[in-house]
Image (cartoon, rainbow, N blue to C red; front, side, top):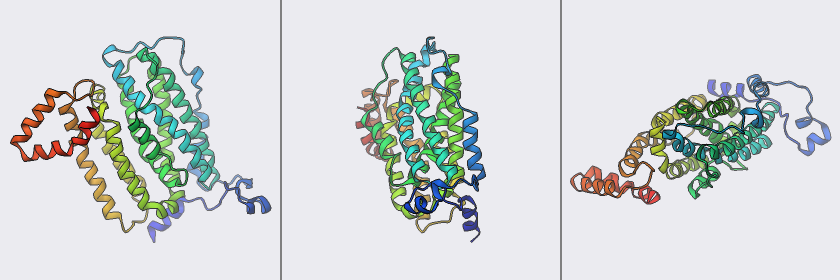
Length: 341
């Protein structure tokens, strides 16, 4: 009962965002002009976005070159190239969320977030070729799969808000922060700082608004849990060749994932438990345990460009002949080795 009361305190009691026939005939919904905002923290984060607005064309002097350290330039570009299509997918996701939420606070905020995601995509699309001297590469099929299947479901607002604002933004913001520590070009660092400031607000929005979609989460929780498990597998395939760039940039994926799991627990721990809670916790515990092992296997079998190194692979197989545990690791890793080959 105490948890339920806490949850109810998060949910806006008035529908100020729908446009049903009832709202058209009798008022209310999107035609509510009272200006009351029960989710005060949600409204404050919307107003903060207005105060923090920046424009891509004037964010940095785009006619100047990006002079990045040659030792890290390609690694930085690789990481930003991975994140770039995710920003565009988030435009779609945030737009859908804005159409599906019921409070004015959430509707306005996610419309604002959609614009900010569009700015991030536009900024990255402009800056990456300035780092590499080459046109922006199209995302591969695994990245496309990740940012569609794993981000957007136009009929499931709880899935999208969870995967964008609670999980995705938290991971992306940490990566942007670590890249900015390694970058040296002042204009690139300024741009990444602007994006990171927005991302921090998007993370905060997950905490402010997820309670408003709890009913949908409760209804679709089995599908959401299953899709998130599948998404974690797709993520492993999509990021296989980024282990070396992350190493070069001191992007500790294990630390980042641990932080994400903790953040997810902090946001959802106050929600009522489900019958599947024990299974979900076991899945999360397994993923946390397997993440460092998977990364270690990738490091052991790939070269500096993230491709399979035949000599390293043969060495792994020789070691597997002497160790049942190593043999199991090699066999478990075969799908990922095929992805990198």
